[in-house]
Image 1 (spheres, helix red, strand yellow):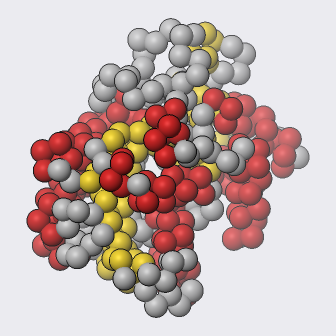
Image 2 (cartoon, rainbow, N blue to C red; image 1 turned 180 degrees about the horizontal axis):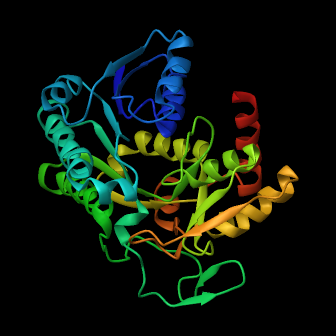
Length: 336
């Protein structure tokens, strides 16, 4: 039986990952989560109510080095999803942000180096490590910005530019994970994820904007937009992300030490205003919204160029943005 540790396993992505992993009876899945985020207790109950025999839950924190060392013993894979995820929170409390995202990641890496050096160590990084990308030339259209010279997206050769405490802490973890492969020959993979959405997500104004917009629209509440709403993101349905995780687990030797961008790609991109327009038609209602100042380091456009991951693993996103959003709307209706 293979022991797999999922930090942040009661979160949105973690819940989807755990459900996938437990389809294989040979996997024993250990969740480490402190349950402080909205929706995690609900997600955990859903997982525990399924009666999985090979599921263990540990309430704890990645900042607890002794606990982390214990949990990594005889582990064949670590999916490190636990994080402080909001830029605004990082600005308000940069020390906690650093401890969770940077120090917590280093604790996990050191634990694996001592206990499970041959395990896959997959780190959920972020496109925020590239900074605001303010040096890239933009064209301002009616409802969106467009990258003039990078219309097909941003690849892994884009220079790093940590902006905001969140960008710095996640970027520090990103680089530590990469370097532990070079220095200690560990089998690490970094995924710089774009905007992921889907079932079991409980978003808010700071994180999980797609589900947050849908939830607000369904309740008839006003949506807050930071900036002018023309900023563009490529959105990735969570099932497609989990499919990439599984391919990387299967090919850990080949992918060891790699850094990949992953997102929905150009064809699955929305500006905030475009998503509101779509939801207004889909839900058949007027949607109210207001504008607030830009958040630090916010990118006007981020579209992930997935070519490297596609060449390495054969992965491609399979769920179109319209199909995925409709699935999410149905899940929200059923879960209310």
